[in-house]
Image (cartoon, rainbow, N blue to C red):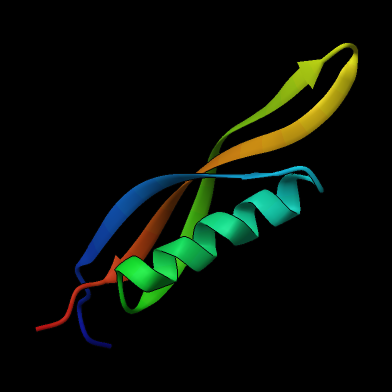
Length: 69
């Protein structure tokens, strides 16, 4: 098995639909920024509340990717 070196970036996705959609939004953006995404880790989950209603969710993730070369 070859050794791998990974890079990582941290992103926060948001969605009015829920946490899964917030993660998917962040991963979709990550795919436009880097190649070879291999994993993600949820670092934080928050919600925005207004007048007693949850309006949207924010999820901060760390995205790991294999470095080329």
